[in-house]
Length: 428
Image 1 (cartoon, rainbow, N blue to C red):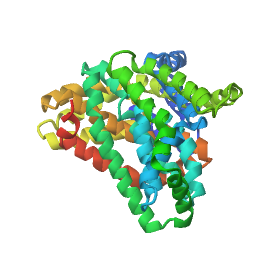
Image 2 (tube, rainbow, N blue to C red):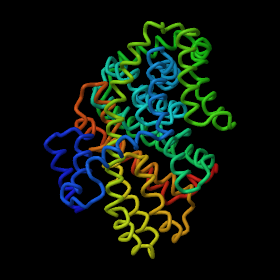
Image 3 (cartoon, rainbow, N blue to C red):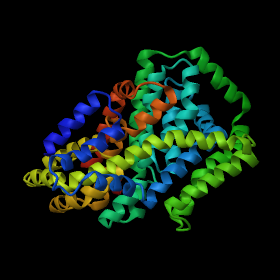
Image 4 (tube, rainbow, N blue to C red):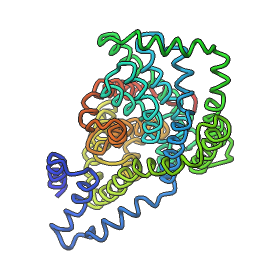
């Protein structure tokens, strides 16, 4: 039956059935074939709703709202202005500034879709105006948005900590160097792309000159409150004053205060438009999350993860082969299942295998989340693709194809993180 489910899922996606609906249909499929199977239609619908009743998930709409407020209020643009001031004049400097902004913004959002939405809404129009192709810009933001779940605070790290018993604080510290490594590799490809494809130096030069004419000190002064935002968010979490979900509330309040009363780029009349945009962006994502949670539950009832883990267990004698197979398995899982249910389902199954080879749980947590972060940009459940598609009106599959070279750099980082534990454990 497991094979039949995946064949049906592929068929539905090929005929362009929306992802959320396709996942919902295949989740009900076993109950249709076997009336005695516990996962009937009513059960599946309850799982969809139950999958959205997770407290950590509250951070997603809140951080997304915060990101849109920051983007509309010019907060995220001021972050971009600071980074582009220093590197904008170099080859690939402006797209690289986008990667750094995502890296920096990940310390605010803790969410890949929120990072993609906040940074993309602000930077994609700027890059397109400077002559960069829109599909490249969308792919760059979608892939770089995955840094939002690797740089702390990270919602998947919290879920993994709850599932495995690993220290969430240690996971947060362990995510810093891998996040920077991935960001550097993405910038390396971005430089290569711009070097080979060419850039409109005249348009870029105009933007860089405009920024540098302001002077460094005035720019830093103007961007101070934007640069302070991750300090407040991370400081509150690391000091134990707030949880990550509560930090999301703080980020919304902070964004409102800065946008309305400090920069004065927002008015109360703008809030209706901001809330509508948030709901439009969030609604399809939350439906996919709920459907993915139901799909994950059905797979668990069919013991699909256990069957895979049993297959991998026979390879435990060879650590390198086992880790490669686990990576491959997680990459496939990330393509069809959302991060949160994947972590909740697979962590208790894979940890015994990890214990056999003596791998540190924090190290494994980083490896797992990096794997699943790639899933944010791989169909069919590539949420970042849909966020970027909503902003650019480019079909998700076109963005996915354009993102392939960037994902290769992501995969190189994954292999380094997998086989060099010190990358993850140096700070923990």
